[in-house]
Length: 396
Image 1 (cartoon, rainbow, N blue to C red):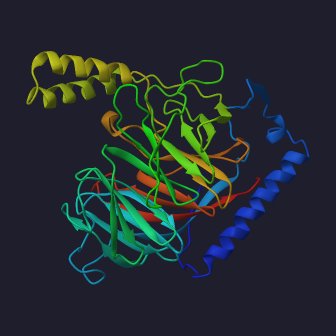
Image 2 (image 1 turned 90 degrees about the vertical axis):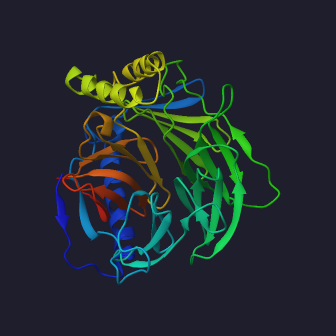
Image 3 (image 1 turned 180 degrees about the vertical axis):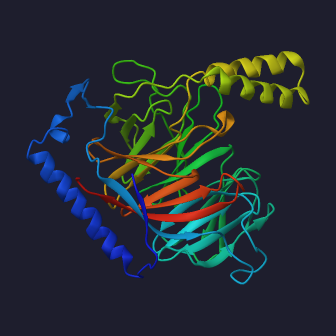
């Protein structure tokens, strides 16, 4: 997969992107309808207990895929915004409207960037527990003219106006992990839950509407364990999608939690070699030994040893309503040494389209109208940059 660099970015690139995405989807559909070998017609499907199961081969069906670099932003400079000369710990990115929002956990700030060229337009938020403040941010979402930030320090959702003014606080009463958007000004929150409780809750931004717990099954329609306490999920229109973490397999649900489709890929899970597993456990044992008694250290490290015997490399999934794509990030976990990102692309029917390899690790990413916005991390310095790529899929 080649990453070609575009030196000059047009401010009208959104129109070009929609055309480009539509063109390759048409190309792909034509290839499928012609019955060409390796196309979607070759991907078997069946129905099990009322659920469609798509059985993809290990090889994607569009080998000519690439991404074009649109722009790269290395964080705000002193002249761009006041009080924040550089990013401290950016952890999340989301696109909404004509902007991209980057959440900085350590600085407790949100940076709004122009989708056209990555220019920093404004920042808002500050550390604390008062109005307009948040601590230990865990997620960000955009709904209409609101930007919502999850705050662990206050166990709440902090609602800001898009221009940065403070709106209100929604108490959660739980620790969150990620926020996704659903139609009707609703949010899908994944987070810590006690025994017997669901880790997913649907919250409404309409005042007076109580939160609704959501149950998503952990097993496949044939009873196989797919997720093993794996929570990564995304909302795509009225659907919710989860990734299996150890393989790039997906399950698509309705917003009420009913299973619609299982998307399988003939990829075997990767066993973690002792050369990576042993140093990780030793580092963990040494850190925990400074604060916990030996029996608790032993119990926790034993649990982590079992969890990491198979690499959880597929820990992020995103959906793009505009282009109808699902995207799964593959990346070696930081605890096992880290490494560059690979993006696996699926169409709305579950066909495995392409695998795109990148040069850097990604902290987070989002996909809108066929454009990928990534928080890419420099391996040498640890500094993050926001990068925008246009997806281009061509037969070769």
